[in-house]
Amino acid sequence: FFPARLSGHAVYSATPHSARSTSRSPTAVMDEYAASVATLVGMLGIDAGQAGTLLQNAGGNIEAAASEYFYMMEEGGGTDGETDGASTDMDEDEDMAMAMAPPPTMARPTAKRPKLEARPAPRLGLDAAGLAALQAGFALSAAPADGADALHRAVRDRTQSYAHGDERGLRYLQHCWERQQPQLQQASAAAAAAFGCE
Image (cartoon, rainbow, N blue to C red; front, side, top):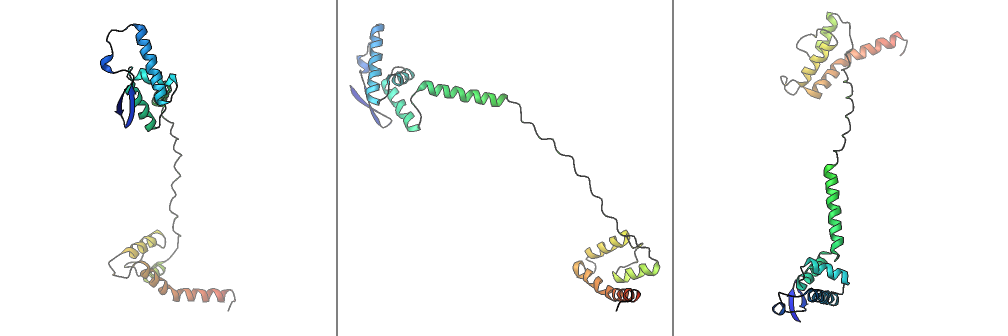
């Protein structure tokens, strides 16, 4: 035996390469194979079946078989070549089945919700005096055509307009509310008098 260091582990060869004959009888080949299996069993502490599998995968080379064993142990794998082959075949079958499987069925989109129409503005039957009062109360440049959609559009445009400086947005709406207070107080007093409330 002579030592050979492979993959950080010391392994031993049963017969020097120089002493091997190129022309051997089948009996000699079988005897050498049995001796190599026994060497692997004694060296690695594995059973004869595992040693034979390693030796066959290594082409009869003990050093290569031992190196393969240590490599598989470092990688966390087993030493049963047949088991590894079966696992590989199963993985390939699963990959093939997944590739051949039809694509998943996509859920049909649900029907769109009906579009909600904007609520129409209240209709106010106002005369010219009433429209003029709206113009004054909302500080509009012109009297609205009616007290409904036209008034809403005019107030919205006035709220978003930069033509009046800071008099826009919430400040504008607050001033509109303040201008309406006298009319609201008069209306409240008239309603109270009509119903006999103090």
